[in-house]
Length: 394
Image (cartoon, rainbow, N blue to C red; front, side, top):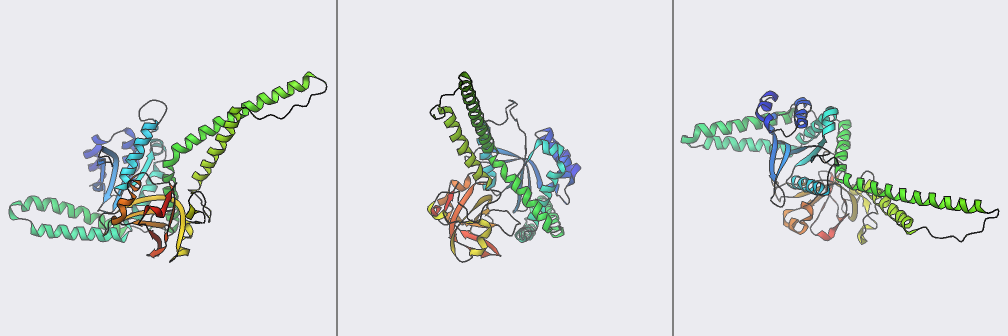
């Protein structure tokens, strides 16, 4: 399916003018994109069973699953942006998509309109990186094989109808397989760019918190400044009232000033913890737990292969793979695929219930301290989690 055919079929489902701009300026300019793999207004259910919709999904086979949201600042037209209720709802939608194996990309309306090339670059690099995965290629080949077997076994009275459906599915998958095998591998500089773009996406989850921190800190600073000005003016007036100023005993700041200083200090410390998502020291120390006191940074995990150690880092992506034997949940720490320096936490299906409902919530961008034996799988360090006692989430 080409762009014109797809737009004629789906234009009425686009929810906003920005979604149409995204289709025209971003999707239509991605190299080797298969429009048959793109669905607008994709329906899904969250963990509470509530019906939800995602602006776009791009799915090739069973393993390449990219969900795309086009976000506006003020969806309700209130002039004040996202409310607390909107933010909680937004987080639940995000958590539901991630828990169902979708890689979520969010683009602001203004970026789609003013910087479509940046949006295109991110989506294209991510798609190329996902297509490089040998598991994805093997999955496409196996699915095509199974469909061909179904074609051969189709009963005679339904042969024409079944053959048409299955033949079309085979054609779509063969096109996707061709795109995978013909995809140009990511160059080292492109891997770096993709990591930077993914890191920028992971910051979205903490924007509301940072905004709150900023407002509180500014209020505290303003209150403190006002108290200092009043105090200074009072002292200057006292000194000017007599030739020899009378020494005054040192007094404590008014209660509001003390509260302002305390709030400013606490919020400042919160902000420092948030910033550790970008660069963490070799000896991490922001999560309070006994076994985390001497934890090491996620980037040093490979150095501790075969050893039991406490490691700390930011959660970048959570993926549940029900199509893989053992239905593992993979939690990527510090960086996401295709980075070769990432740490992977593995929770097999037998142990997943012990971690619910935590791993079904919004984990991206949270700081985690985990303790376990570091093992290497395909040269990537990983730790298997079997008990919630092995980790602490910040």
